[in-house]
Image 1 (cartoon, rainbow, N blue to C red):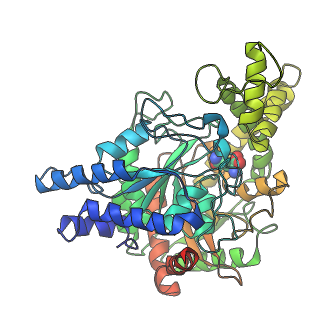
Image 2 (image 1 turned 90 degrees about the vertical axis):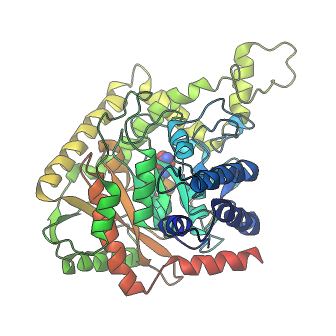
Length: 505
Ligand code: GLN
């Protein structure tokens, strides 16, 4: 049961072949079985999930089912506020904090009837590409437990890849949904900026953050996106427009016909620095799109080579200002400085922030406050904002020539735990291909492209679309999924399943 897609499970519920309680229990059993080694979850809410599942079954019996995913369990990244459930953002500074309210995304999951299994592990405050910066220990990739599951949303991706949950929610500020998707063989979507509410999402960088679906199939992502997306008056950057028809686009794309679609290959998002196997799977996928009727054009976005540098000024600037609220006074951790009899508020603040934040968080606070300081503001933050505009213009020009843009999602397959932990730049480089979309606010999807190295690890194919055209991601993603399934002969994740099974023994 746990290996089925959410769409299949929904059909089974509809047909009366199973119950939400049975599905939820199966996920909880699976978590109990494998999460000791995978560590995708920071908190599991068995009792709450089962109560929500019972309520879903009761609704179904009364003919009051709320929507296609009513009764399907979901896991939520620990950066989204959940009333009554701990929300730590992978940080010691929020250890034990239980929010008094739900993020809008969580409210929508509850209203649509999805039992919430628990909160998934992440790099501290979503800073990282490996989940190793979590203060609670890393998540492991179910494909190979010595490897990273990507980050910062490695917990959500691993939970889905290890069949602990059919669906999960992640957040993507520079690639944290798409890059984990690529290295765990799952599907991940970063919606258009403003397409999913940020209310109750603990901000890393407000102008870049977007929550989105993490699933095993493209259709499942579309179904989940329709639940969590759409206008929210509580988020001032939320787009006041209906979502495009995402599920319809996924279903249409699944036929594998892309006649007339113009696909732009971005010169700057490939080549040097990308693993040969990752590029080989990318090229093969491209050939399949051509067979499906798409026209491939080469597009150049010259400013994309500055995207990483731009991001690592804008993100730390916003993050340093956001993280100022963790002051030991209002909520979260409070650490008393050692050997000081009656410490001042500032001394408590300093001791708390020293004990509560990890190295990567401190690094970015320093970087951000420096970039924003009055003498350097124009030289760093101001310049970065200008380059950001140029990146958006490159996107606009590219979308004149192509309906969607494509690239490998991440430059390599999953690396080993510890391999890049002491080298921040090497860690940052994982997001080379995903960051431009966040800077410009455009949507992107990562779809598994096949196994890309001698160890049989997966890679991802990224599709980017113009802002508000998220439906194109689903059309192309679903087509690619259909075409690739023919080549690879069934779900790629079967291997991960076997490995996670082995690991549990
Ligand atoms: N890895 C990137 C970073 O460390 C992206 C993080 C994210 O998308 N949350 O900032």
